[in-house]
Amino acid sequence: MTSPLSRRFQVRDISAQYSGPTFDLIFHDTESKVIRYSEAIWDSEALALAEADRLEKSQAHPVHWDAC
Image (cartoon, rainbow, N blue to C red; front, top):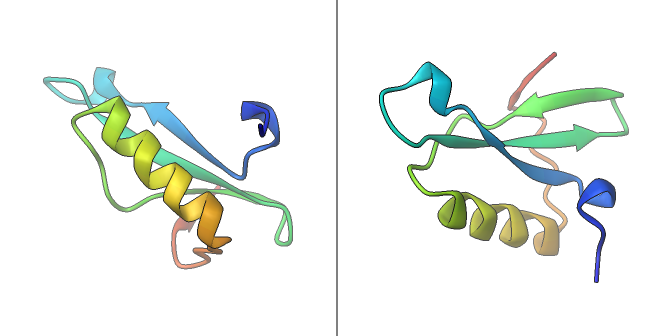
């Protein structure tokens, strides 16, 4: 099993910025040495985690996401 700290995709709780439960994904882009934030948001941590798992398994590299 992959440690959450070694995963490239992680769920982030951004509920404080919205009126209800809201989550997005962060992507640890080690090639570009930046953290990228998903454009999509989810109203359930479980849905966001399912998407993070899907992206992790597909070895996605969403360089179009905003970086900081």
